[in-house]
Structure formats: structure tokens, C-alpha cells
Image (cartoon, rainbow, N blue to C red; front, top):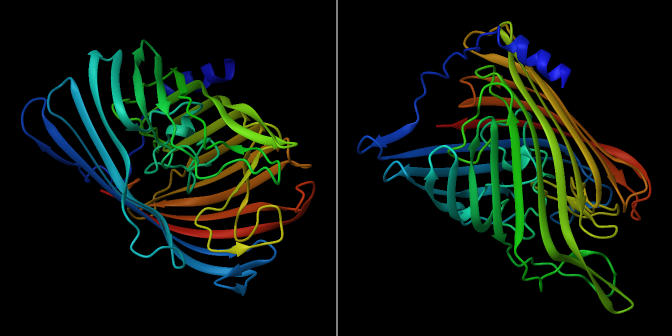
Length: 421
């Protein structure tokens, strides 16, 4: 707490950092009256990658150790507005993760669709619908338009594409601020998963016969400048425009969501998660420093582990994670995550550079060794978060088929073009 207080005191003497070209880009907004408007945000993120594939990977049936590929990480549009000062309507749709060998003409789908009413101004808003007011951590509600690293750490979206719709569930939420305390809580009806426990393997898995509602929440203490909470999306970096020091904590619980078969009899377990985190973003001279630290404990039931590869173009594979770029991302156990970046004080023409590094260290019950992911990169801001180029390096472990040993490590280089209006 002493260190946090010192940083807060130091930041109070520093002025926000301006980014060339960013302030000239105005949001798309149409006003109809004093408290009536509709606003629209468009954004796209394109990835070019050179990847070492997991052992035994095939791509389109051909054995492949190294792959170069292109993909659309995200292409979306968000519309929101107020018919009056006490009502808010939001709709968000688009596509994710299109590569050369998955579905052509992917159908744009709804990410968010909710309505909200103000009960006590600034202190209590209540909404209903398909929403992103998530619990457990800041990273679970992070804005995909304002990352520090190239992408979010993914694991904080604890049930991603299992019982949610791309990190969203349908439910009722409440949010607001009480002095320096910002809160969000929700009661949700999870989607029915497309997986189920297999009596043959006995592995723990999400249950498609679960009908229980889930609860989640997150609170953060804002020790410096407050953050907005009109929309759920939290920035990964403010590029020195704000002086933010937050301590947060959250939880998630879905009763009887998990199960496994032992001697033909199903055992049932709750899915739970708890987390605590720290976010600091502050100007430092003409530069800016950003860091985010998260500890999270997940309990999906005995020895649960889930392998994920973002925009995975490979299949097959002889390691625990299978083919492509997958690795053990989530599981029952403890996870620590840390990322930090520094916006350089020097300008390069009308642009700025921000090197960063990030790491995930997970201690999953099912694995015989820690899962350590190392990442680093640099953001080249052409117009703040409205136009940037990111060069990113990722190094992941390759586990033996039984998950008890790390056989090797594999690398991945990514160049991202990200644009927002």
C-alpha cells in the first residue's frame, strides 16, 4: 500500500501526455436533443503471423512445422445511445478469428445487446440482456480497442465459448459508483455448452445438463482519477492521458457446471473463480508507464485443463494441446499474470512507440510442471488507439501427451494492424 501511495503522490505532479493525431479524431455521434444521441464505433484488427506449430501438426492435411498466415482477429461495429438521460441502449456485433482455412463468409453475430435504466444517478444502474459486465477481474471486462499488449490474456474469460457467447452471457446486472468504489455485479443464465463429460475418459468437463444460474461481480477502489463506467469496457492503457491507480477483486460462481464420470457414476462440481488485481497508468515526464498484475484461482473440478490456440490454423498434433499454436490456457489451479509497458517520451514524426512485456504463469492440478507463457512487443501509435501497428513475440510451452513434462518451447511472431473510428 505504501508503494501505491507513493506512485499516486508522484503522479499528481505530472501532466497528461498528448498523442499526435489522436485528439483530431472525433467519435461518430448524432445528437437529437440535450440528452438524446446515438454513437457508433467501428474497429478492425488484422494479424500476420509466423508460427512454430506444435509437434505432429497438419494444415489442410499436410504436415507442417512452420506456418505463415493472415487473419482477421476482430472486425466489429458498436452502436449505443440514450433516448433520454436515464435510459441507455447498446448493440455490438461483428466477426472474430477468420483465417484462410476456416468458414468463408462468416456470419456476423451479436456480441452485446442490452438496455439499461438509471435508478440512482451515478450510484445505481440496472440493465438486462446479453452483456459484458463481467466479474473476477479487470481483464474480464477489458476493451478490445485499448489493449496494452497485442491481445488480452484470454484466461480471465473463464468460460469463453463454453457457457458464454464470446465472453458474454444473458442476465441482469447492476453497476455504479459509491465514492471511490466502482462495482459491477450480475446474475446470468449460462448458455448450454456444446461439450459434456465423457464416460469413457473420465475427464472433467462442462455439463450440458446444468440449468443453474451463475453469479459474478467485480469491485475496484479508484485511488487516483476515476474511470468511466457508462459502458463496461476497461482500458488496458491510457497512454498517459489519465492518472489511474486501482485495486480490484472479483468472483464468479456457477453451481454444478462441471462433471466427470467415475466407474460410470457422474460426479458434479461447481465452477468457481476468484481474483485480485492492480492497475496503474500514469504519466512519467513526457512518457507514460502502465502495469497490470492479476492473481486468479479457478476451480473447474478435479484435474481440469483446457487447451486453446487463438486463430488456430492447425489440427492433429501429438502433444497435450494437439495441433497448431494451442497450449494449456485454463485449468483448475492458480494463475499469475503481469504486463507492463512504457510510452517513450520521444516522438517519431507524428508517432509514438510503446514497448511492453507480459507473462502468464499457471500452476494447474492436471500438469506436472508450471505453464509459463512469455510475451513482448512494441506498439507504434500513428494516432493513439485509433491507428496503431503492433509487433509481438510469444513463446509457449509444449507439454508431453500426459501433461507431466515440458518437451519444448515454441515461438510465434505477430504483426497487427489495428484501426478504430
